[in-house]
Image (cartoon, rainbow, N blue to C red; front, side, top):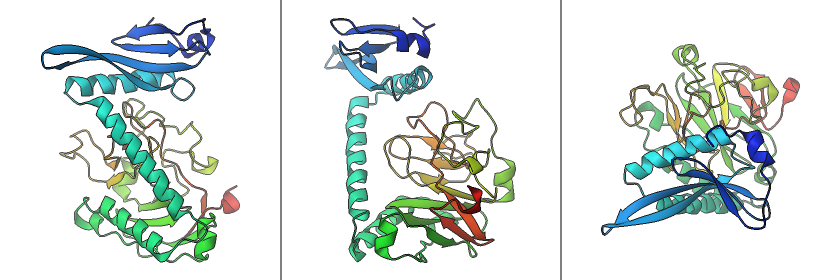
Length: 304
């Protein structure tokens, strides 16, 4: 069944009982009697000299295509061989996701309190605190013109980047989510990847950015990158890791963003690497430049 395609999978019909279609190395497609199709990974672990079979549900075929399922399966196999309890990791993922959703509810309430806002900034400071060096000293912007009520409803915000140094970035809050503004150095711009072997969606074909940022820089001005700081896997906030050849991330690391929750990697344009849990590039919100140093997030402006 290694020659199976997405078209073949779509054509598979339900039966009066569930059944599985094997794709090799423990990866298979589970099809319910109602027609639901899910990717699963069957593997074995040894506990007290007893070999136990386990089933790990990767996800729904409607959300994960065959190519992505194979990539996730390869990552899971590697983790199992390393002795990682992938079921326990999955439980932690769910807890992390639920926590982020709960925090978002509090942050986006119709009447946000000062404590909510302080909590958001404190959490973001803790997330960014491990970066070290100049990048640990990231100022949080509070120069947002709408009222707190308007901001929680998703009104546009204005970001002043006049003091942002090359290589550094700022974090602001919009719609209860962190928005990053990175001022890329000339070297970062020159080193922007075009390698299809490394990136899952290098041309940004998937619609996770406005059409006017559908380029390799994923920005209006290559010098400034504007992203939602939310991993497209389960909603954690990735870390800014601009330095290449990191001991933590490997000698082939060229700089970008790393999600500490489950290991997803993104380049300095927010494009997701192959073979990681995150399925899509980081989202680019609608924005425009009101001047050379003022960015409006939440509207397309004249770009639309």
